[in-house]
Amino acid sequence: LGAVPGMGKSEFVDGLLVNMSLLHNWRTLFFSPENHPTENHMMKIAEKYIVKKMNSFTKKDIDQSLEYLDKYFTWMYPEKPTLEALLNIAKQQAADDLIDCLILDPWNNIAHTRSTGMLHEYLGEALREVIKFCRDFNIFTMVVTHPTKLGVDIDGRTLPVDMYSLSDGAMWRNKADYGIIINRPD
Image (cartoon, rainbow, N blue to C red; front, side, top):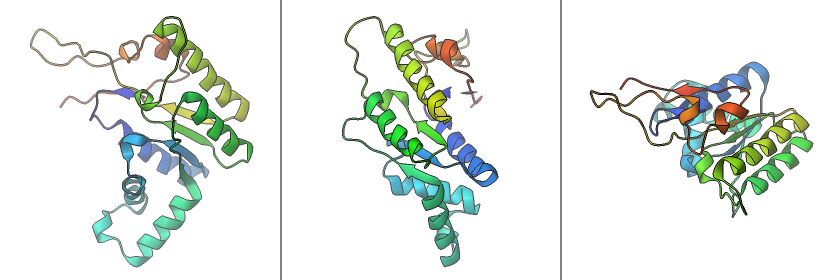
Protein backbone atom coordinates (compact mmCIF):
# COMPACT_ATOMS: atom_id res chain seq x y z
CA LEU A 1 0.00 0.00 0.00
CA GLY A 2 1.52 3.33 -0.95
CA ALA A 3 0.65 6.99 -0.92
CA VAL A 4 1.90 10.43 -0.02
CA PRO A 5 2.11 11.01 3.76
CA GLY A 6 -1.21 12.17 5.18
CA MET A 7 -3.36 10.64 2.42
CA GLY A 8 -5.01 8.10 4.74
CA LYS A 9 -3.00 4.90 4.23
CA SER A 10 -3.22 3.81 7.86
CA GLU A 11 -6.90 4.76 8.10
CA PHE A 12 -7.59 2.68 5.00
CA VAL A 13 -5.69 -0.28 6.49
CA ASP A 14 -7.56 0.00 9.81
CA GLY A 15 -10.93 0.12 8.05
CA LEU A 16 -10.05 -2.87 5.90
CA LEU A 17 -8.96 -4.89 8.93
CA VAL A 18 -12.08 -4.05 10.92
CA ASN A 19 -14.12 -5.34 7.98
CA MET A 20 -11.98 -8.48 7.61
CA SER A 21 -12.27 -9.24 11.34
CA LEU A 22 -16.05 -8.88 11.21
CA LEU A 23 -16.54 -10.77 7.95
CA HIS A 24 -13.86 -13.47 8.25
CA ASN A 25 -12.63 -13.43 11.88
CA TRP A 26 -9.17 -12.28 10.81
CA ARG A 27 -6.74 -11.60 13.63
CA THR A 28 -4.09 -8.99 12.95
CA LEU A 29 -0.57 -8.38 14.24
CA PHE A 30 0.50 -4.75 13.83
CA PHE A 31 3.90 -3.14 13.61
CA SER A 32 2.68 0.44 13.41
CA PRO A 33 4.99 2.89 15.22
CA GLU A 34 3.41 5.92 13.53
CA ASN A 35 0.17 4.98 15.31
CA HIS A 36 1.84 5.35 18.68
CA PRO A 37 0.89 5.26 21.49
CA THR A 38 -0.95 1.99 20.98
CA GLU A 39 -3.92 3.28 22.98
CA ASN A 40 -4.55 5.94 20.32
CA HIS A 41 -4.46 3.31 17.58
CA MET A 42 -6.80 1.11 19.59
CA MET A 43 -9.17 4.05 19.96
CA LYS A 44 -9.23 4.66 16.19
CA ILE A 45 -10.03 1.01 15.54
CA ALA A 46 -12.68 0.95 18.28
CA GLU A 47 -14.37 3.99 16.69
CA LYS A 48 -14.53 2.15 13.36
CA TYR A 49 -15.94 -0.93 15.06
CA ILE A 50 -18.58 0.86 17.18
CA VAL A 51 -19.19 3.43 14.37
CA LYS A 52 -19.10 6.52 16.54
CA LYS A 53 -16.55 8.80 18.15
CA MET A 54 -14.98 7.75 21.43
CA ASN A 55 -16.37 10.79 23.29
CA SER A 56 -19.88 9.41 22.75
CA PHE A 57 -19.11 5.79 23.76
CA THR A 58 -21.30 4.28 26.44
CA LYS A 59 -19.94 1.91 29.07
CA LYS A 60 -21.31 -0.95 26.93
CA ASP A 61 -19.50 0.43 23.84
CA ILE A 62 -16.22 0.56 25.78
CA ASP A 63 -16.64 -2.99 27.06
CA GLN A 64 -17.57 -4.31 23.60
CA SER A 65 -14.68 -2.54 21.90
CA LEU A 66 -12.13 -3.77 24.47
CA GLU A 67 -13.33 -7.33 24.03
CA TYR A 68 -13.23 -6.91 20.23
CA LEU A 69 -9.73 -5.41 20.25
CA ASP A 70 -8.44 -8.16 22.53
CA LYS A 71 -9.87 -10.85 20.25
CA TYR A 72 -8.69 -9.50 16.89
CA PHE A 73 -5.68 -7.19 17.27
CA THR A 74 -2.15 -7.44 18.65
CA TRP A 75 0.72 -4.95 18.46
CA MET A 76 4.47 -5.51 18.49
CA TYR A 77 7.24 -3.04 19.21
CA PRO A 78 10.57 -4.88 19.41
CA GLU A 79 13.50 -2.89 20.79
CA LYS A 80 15.26 -3.04 17.42
CA PRO A 81 12.58 -3.48 14.76
CA THR A 82 14.56 -5.20 12.03
CA LEU A 83 12.67 -7.12 9.39
CA GLU A 84 14.12 -10.33 10.85
CA ALA A 85 12.89 -9.46 14.36
CA LEU A 86 9.41 -8.53 13.12
CA LEU A 87 9.08 -11.67 11.01
CA ASN A 88 10.30 -13.84 13.89
CA ILE A 89 7.57 -12.46 16.15
CA ALA A 90 5.02 -12.93 13.37
CA LYS A 91 6.23 -16.50 12.73
CA GLN A 92 5.74 -17.37 16.38
CA GLN A 93 2.23 -15.89 16.36
CA ALA A 94 1.39 -17.66 13.09
CA ALA A 95 2.78 -21.01 14.28
CA ASP A 96 0.52 -20.74 17.35
CA ASP A 97 -2.41 -19.92 15.01
CA LEU A 98 -2.90 -16.51 16.59
CA ILE A 99 -2.87 -14.33 13.46
CA ASP A 100 -4.24 -14.24 9.94
CA CYS A 101 -2.74 -10.90 8.95
CA LEU A 102 0.52 -8.98 9.45
CA ILE A 103 0.74 -5.21 8.96
CA LEU A 104 4.09 -3.43 8.57
CA ASP A 105 3.22 0.27 8.67
CA PRO A 106 5.38 1.92 7.42
CA TRP A 107 8.34 0.22 5.78
CA ASN A 108 10.68 3.14 6.49
CA ASN A 109 10.28 2.62 10.28
CA ILE A 110 11.83 -0.82 10.05
CA ALA A 111 15.55 -0.88 10.94
CA HIS A 112 16.96 -2.15 7.66
CA THR A 113 20.41 -3.69 7.66
CA ARG A 114 22.20 -4.68 4.52
CA SER A 115 25.80 -5.69 4.20
CA THR A 116 26.48 -5.02 0.53
CA GLY A 117 24.78 -4.47 -2.75
CA MET A 118 22.46 -1.94 -4.22
CA LEU A 119 19.31 -0.80 -2.45
CA HIS A 120 17.05 -2.49 -5.01
CA GLU A 121 18.91 -5.77 -4.44
CA TYR A 122 18.34 -5.50 -0.69
CA LEU A 123 14.67 -4.63 -1.22
CA GLY A 124 14.26 -7.63 -3.50
CA GLU A 125 15.79 -9.93 -0.87
CA ALA A 126 13.72 -8.39 1.93
CA LEU A 127 10.49 -8.76 -0.02
CA ARG A 128 11.40 -12.38 -0.81
CA GLU A 129 11.57 -12.97 2.97
CA VAL A 130 8.16 -11.36 3.46
CA ILE A 131 6.68 -13.42 0.60
CA LYS A 132 8.20 -16.62 2.00
CA PHE A 133 6.66 -15.88 5.40
CA CYS A 134 3.25 -15.28 3.77
CA ARG A 135 3.37 -18.53 1.85
CA ASP A 136 4.84 -20.66 4.64
CA PHE A 137 2.16 -19.60 7.12
CA ASN A 138 -0.71 -18.59 4.80
CA ILE A 139 -0.73 -15.09 6.29
CA PHE A 140 -1.93 -11.97 4.47
CA THR A 141 0.72 -9.28 4.85
CA MET A 142 0.40 -5.63 3.96
CA VAL A 143 3.42 -3.37 3.79
CA VAL A 144 2.73 0.37 3.86
CA THR A 145 5.30 2.52 2.10
CA HIS A 146 5.83 6.08 0.92
CA PRO A 147 6.73 7.39 -2.54
CA THR A 148 10.07 8.79 -3.58
CA LYS A 149 10.26 12.43 -4.58
CA LEU A 150 6.91 13.54 -5.89
CA GLY A 151 6.61 14.71 -9.46
CA VAL A 152 4.72 17.87 -10.39
CA ASP A 153 2.94 18.80 -13.58
CA ILE A 154 3.38 22.03 -15.54
CA ASP A 155 0.89 23.81 -13.25
CA GLY A 156 2.77 22.73 -10.11
CA ARG A 157 0.23 20.12 -9.03
CA THR A 158 1.52 16.89 -7.53
CA LEU A 159 1.33 13.99 -9.96
CA PRO A 160 -0.43 10.81 -8.83
CA VAL A 161 1.76 8.13 -7.31
CA ASP A 162 2.04 4.68 -8.92
CA MET A 163 3.69 1.44 -7.83
CA TYR A 164 6.94 2.31 -9.61
CA SER A 165 7.30 5.57 -7.70
CA LEU A 166 7.33 3.99 -4.24
CA SER A 167 10.40 4.59 -2.10
CA ASP A 168 13.44 2.38 -2.69
CA GLY A 169 12.59 1.18 -6.16
CA ALA A 170 10.50 -0.68 -8.66
CA MET A 171 10.75 -3.91 -6.64
CA TRP A 172 7.47 -2.92 -4.99
CA ARG A 173 5.69 -3.31 -8.33
CA ASN A 174 7.76 -6.28 -9.42
CA LYS A 175 7.31 -8.34 -6.23
CA ALA A 176 3.87 -7.41 -4.89
CA ASP A 177 0.96 -9.77 -5.44
CA TYR A 178 -1.33 -6.74 -5.16
CA GLY A 179 -0.68 -3.04 -4.93
CA ILE A 180 -2.97 -0.36 -3.63
CA ILE A 181 -2.16 3.30 -4.17
CA ILE A 182 -4.11 6.02 -2.42
CA ASN A 183 -4.24 9.29 -4.36
CA ARG A 184 -6.58 12.05 -3.26
CA PRO A 185 -7.13 15.13 -5.41
CA ASP A 186 -6.86 17.45 -2.40
